[in-house]
Length: 155
View (cartoon, rainbow, N blue to C red):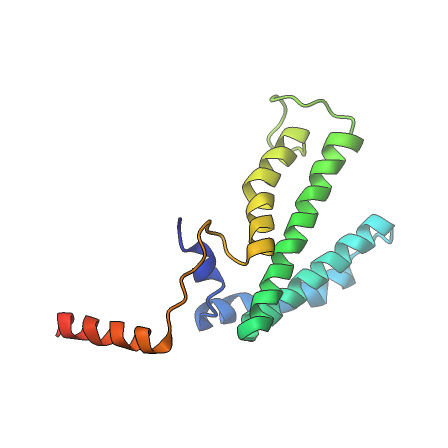
């Protein structure tokens, strides 16, 4: 498996400073530009604001709070894709076909999106990782010992 989750959620200052201004700008501007006050629009806006809040919390905190924040982000993505899937399959009235324009929402796209994005996010929400195997825990003394051996090989 790749180290995608580890890289994205590592707390790198580059990632934190590159993403945070756009998240804050979106959180400030989006409510001002929303023209609809339907329950669906308000719920979507609240979901996006929560997503931004948890993303910022995860990027700028450490330890358990960071882990829980990113799991909430993944959970919100699961809810969004599950809602899209349910709407397209049950309420849109569109047939499940492999034809149509690529820019239109369709039941087929909701299934593919849920499988490709929703299920990995569900996995991360439940287990806190994208891999199937648990991340091995290295004790501080073992980690220091491994660094010493690596220095001896390299030096």
